[in-house]
Image (tube, rainbow, N blue to C red; front, side, top):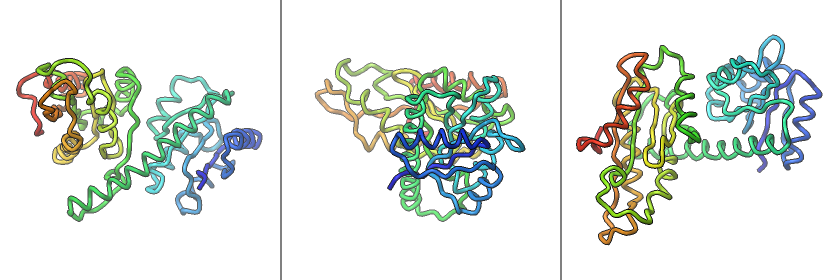
Length: 305
């Protein structure tokens, strides 16, 4: 089944251009709407159920950022990738778009190759979202604890950021008043810090990132590699028990994978070392991440949090 696209743009010419670009990629199912209010209403009513939404920024009455924010308030639209299209180069637009819930952006006028690459990237993201929902159901079944569900509880995937710089930029985009309610879980393989095993072909290096990326994490979390050894998960969770639950999922996933150093004759499974910290004040958010990373190097960095 082909993915369903929703295009929101007040310009009929722009709508048709985007539709043609999608058609060249082999995608025929695209709904075009010029009125963002009508689009939000249709999404709220469930009459439209797209796999990807493309929104133009410059629209009268309601711009793309506001449209994106309203769409994210719809429970069924939490995990649907949103791409913002903009010809405005203002420095405020992109941070606001990402804060409103956009997953990516395309600058106008766009190159066909860039357009295709970003759309296909969001299609892969949608596949991951669907897989996370499946994992969430499985996790809930295993925990066997009936609970009230909310949009914040919904499991989703956060794309691995390409660099530590991008990670800190994303953290900085969160509202300052939310910083003190965040937690940071830094993690690495025990071998990576202790160096007790010989260097060489390490199976874990090739597969650890993939394992960690498939661990269910709540919506609003960010996950990224900070360097070749250390990963970090930033969590917007107020409840320490929920933070602990997420951390334990990372631990259990690595235990289940039974990674080992290829040069270790004992084939002893490598364990994940993890440290969780919270900022002490609004200004200490970077320090909290640094503290978590530093804790990984101490003998007290534990497998329980």
